[in-house]
Length: 423
Image (cartoon, rainbow, N blue to C red; front, side, top):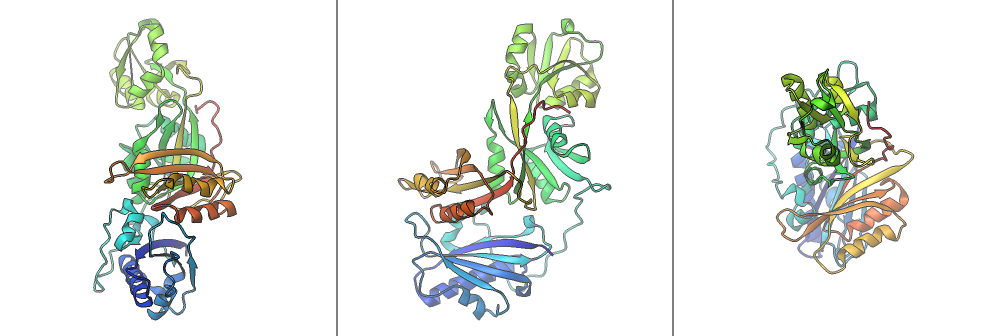
């Protein structure tokens, strides 16, 4: 049976043993009630306290609740002027088959500030609450045992091309309408993984994708980089001299703007690259072409009149592969995190110092507005290394003391660069 991590935190009104033990027991009961935990299934419990709580160890609260068989550990966090005061954190290692998306982390009292993505929505369940109905069977692989990977777009999309690049031909794909639907397909068990575009070398970051990573509790389990090669597609028998207008997604049209201008063709925006190819295959409108992937041409029976028509030869899209289970470390790994700092001078500088002082290289840092907190920001960071590496692990522990909240999005094997982006 797998062991999964369940997190929680609370704050204490005063540094006295009764206050610490009472708040800790409230937190443990809330975690148990929210997840229907049998303490006999707990492998261990790790507590940390801020340095201003020294009147009692919170592990004693678990013993007083009858958790005598559970191995317990308590540690004192590094002192920080920016952390939340009088805070107790706990990590429960729980032996359970329950999927991670169905687990409820619990943050009580002022500790709700540590996880704004949960939006304070937890309400402890009453002791008499009946056990939840068993979840319906989830289809996470097809009959042949292949991976089932969800992607946004229509068949023939560049995302589908990236899936084939990463997994090869032995993979099933599930097209969905939106980025949100990628997460939902995994959470509902209709897909075992999902491929989410997060960044393009020309257009920059995809903000909605990063917001969804904060909102959901899936892991980043892989990285894919696809060299985007736009192709001019048309029905069989069409020549370049016949073309008057070209359909595609606005971003694809912008990335081929010089090519279209040189030919004097009218760009016509469509909602999707592969969708424009499908529509053209259905209407076979005279004098019309579409810009999409070579895979889209193959999917919809269109000829590739010219490949690689993008203005920039290094047009690359970066994707995150999403899943529920953490992968084994690879030879070269990356770690992605998101955090917010206290709104005080030097807070970000001090947080970054935890990484710099340990020689950890950042490959990306980007800020996004923090919901419901005008002019406050969360920071998305990609760094080299795995969270299990000693230096990275110590840096993340240090960041816990210097941030208002910290979420580990995942550690995963770094992408192998694509050379041609076509299948």
